[in-house]
Image (tube, rainbow, N blue to C red; front, side):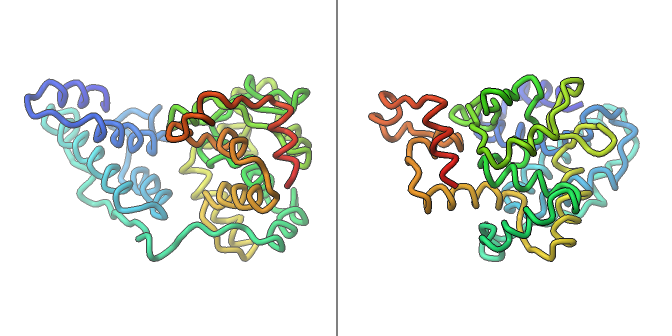
Length: 274
């Protein structure tokens, strides 16, 4: 349905800018857990759960999700694929930048996470994010074939050119955690207890928030990445290595971006400083 609407919308004279289309593609990805469902089988609650999984994001993110949904449902109703527009009953909530900012896990909280490893479900996912700098969606999309335990690295990342398919060195502390998750018979590294792949929405709604509640912590899903950056900086890690590991662009620094190359051994040495 998304592809049908996109083809129709791009055929109109009043064109949408490339940047807006990029936002729409990201917004559509936020509904990934519904991508394999028949459009007519989706219910209001299914859409609402996806929206709720991102209510910690900015108004711009939710506005893009809303725009894509409304456009798809209006198109579907116009072409008589459906009888009712489900978007009319949805609640769109977001977090203002002044309400909540990313906050790193404190040293004491990190100790607590290690002490609760395998006692509270999915604590290992948070620890892997803290020691790799991966965004939640990036970690959830890591495929097993891209996990190289013997060489101590993974390949993954998304969103930007600098972030896609990057080398992610594995800190020695989390190699046992990754190894415990690794199953060569599964497509993805991170799966739920039933062996099924986690989408961001199901992870957020069913696991991360529950985990935070049990730990009595208040954090956002991306706080693991924020913690990694903070720990690396405090440890005096090489700035170029930090950017390479996190997938940050160096296009504004021609010298570093063009002439500086880092080996896996160098990246491992830096990541093991934390």
